[in-house]
Image (cartoon, rainbow, N blue to C red; front, side, top):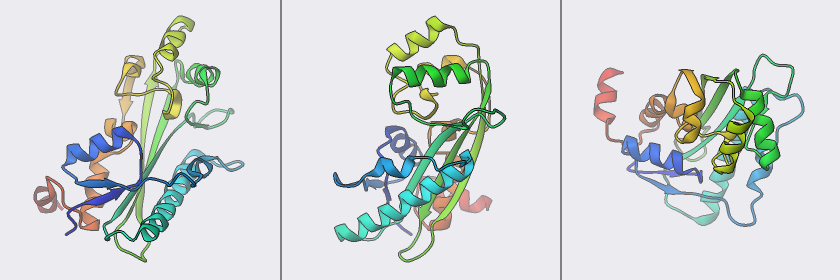
Length: 216
């Protein structure tokens, strides 16, 4: 049983959620010379599910190389990625992190009054020289119609930046949400039910490990 894992993510929300599960972790973040953002550029005609799976597995491969380069003791490596999609629309399906205020406004107008999907992929590398175990969790989120004033006020709060879909469910953005079908923690960036299953498969200890095992 592994007593901790490496988390290759700068997201404070993912760190909070792992702590909530009682998982010990150490950060395994990119070096200054790594172009980590290049991984997140969508490919031509790539749908949201294929995108989030590809990006997460690419992050995992990069993190494994980082671990080897730094000559660290072994522990499983966790990577994740979240994206937002309007699956039944003719417009671009993948709504990532806004680049500026105008982009945040564009994304929020697309989501206004619509039901969108939030897809979070997880990849956990359990052992050296093996393939990661991975999954994609999908939730549906229905937004209320957003007025121009509300969109401007939300952008002025600075909350949309650094978040897929230009909003955070754990913050002011929660006031826009009429309905959720799926996983609240998955929308935040790490679905805890699915995460507990992967932790058990990888042999990583966490607070509820015995209880989860007894239900398997």
